Image (cartoon, rainbow, N blue to C red; front, side, top):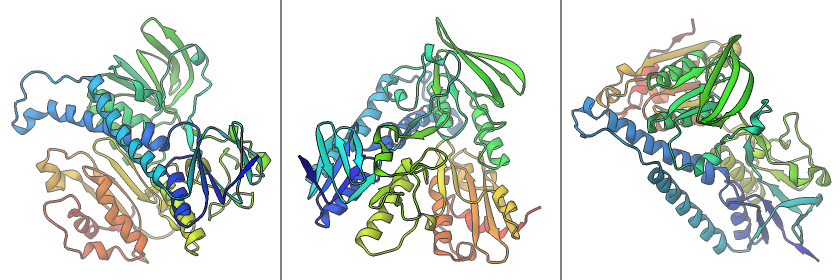
Length: 459
């Protein structure tokens, strides 16, 4: 017998539950399907647990620097990884418990556990149940890419998911991937006490960023003892008595790295294989993500895709915005679009890198007249007071419209300060709104007006 609903939401990640609850509050009967964990990547093995670990790693780092601040902590700093993990688990569990309680109390929402598979445009099967609805929302997220390196299938390795179960300190952690996930783990475990080596295919870390940003991040990591190998090719993997050995070339020269543990952080791919999307008429794009238009609609009428699975974000905040777009359009009569949002994200190393809008390379390529402001953190009083003067702030402005085009802040509290720039960009007002504002002293953000006073044409 087919069970009918007004809407089906497949996947209980960041976008799924709030949309299900909103639709239910609007009087629609909703089925929310989840095959594994409520909360998706962010809550279980992404943002929340990793940033909790980052916090523990920062405490260890500051404890080692205590003497710089005139503080004597006595004996050498030690890290109890079992307790670090227990703290992380407790933070995650509290969030999961709250989410489960919220969903269970939601009006008109039925939670079904299991894996969904389309049998038609508006029908799915979950184990022995057939469910149908005129509206279906796909929110199945993504998972780590496992490269096809020779020997990898015979060697032990970790992903960002399996790292969450680790309650010991790797003697030597090899991190494959020099982008956001990999670098956060690299710095984190170096601060916990592991030897860490990062290997990266590109000729520099976080290659999507400007070269000055990449160089500064690499310098910060190297100053803490993280080893970095770039321009890596031809990787082969072998199990050893102590762990793993990676043989490769780097800039054409043979390189061999032996470690106790290998973390794969070379990218992510969408969870689409088990859905049988052709049965619903849902098309994939050239990268393997579910193709959506600006309103998140797929090629199948009445089917939408949210979050990582649509390839239009890959961040928790963009997944949440996907939910906001759908709720506004379907329930509020609005016409919100993916293209309305401004690209913004952060790398949560310490100090963090916060990014909004265009890179300098993109601004140059746009052909418009561009102004640039740059300030090293050694000029920021708050950074000097805290003994954390690494990094810089960089802002790009359209010389004619005086609108902010983009910014890169690599500094303490960058992940918070960046929102002042983001909000001005979203309001579509000139940079002078910030330049003429009176900010609170002593803060990092108070230097934004001073930074903008130094705007000059790109060289």
